[in-house]
Image (cartoon, rainbow, N blue to C red; front, top):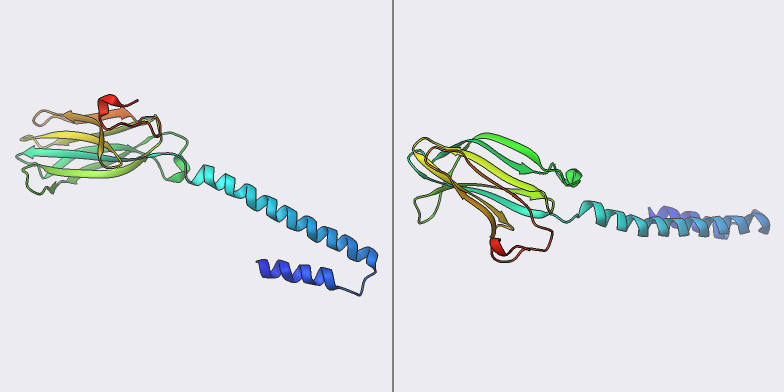
Length: 179
């Protein structure tokens, strides 16, 4: 693109078939066009920074299942955003229905997890139902490690974790110390 513009600039600056009266307006037009191009480029960067990379939390929803029938969960749903367009702060429901859990290393529990992006101070939730002989514990983690919600359910009961995400940058090590 720049080579086309430079070619036009070169033509406007070296053209000798017109009188000096038409060459001067052509030069002023070229300088004005260059200024507009520079201004639109600089303002475009500011617009991109604010819309493509907004502040948001990387949330991990995790469900740990123990007992008979721990290999499946039913009625699984969680809160998520619908890609970068939905950063208006609204959290939408994603329903998965039945999911398979995976075996954990060195333990009797099986787990299921998924990652989501949630805007600050918006609801994050996960809900799942274990089999009749199993119990489930749900967790909501920020950046995959900082627990902000955990709920242990009873045998065969639906377990639900729901919490508003903290203000961006306001998370301490312990959930009860969140500011």
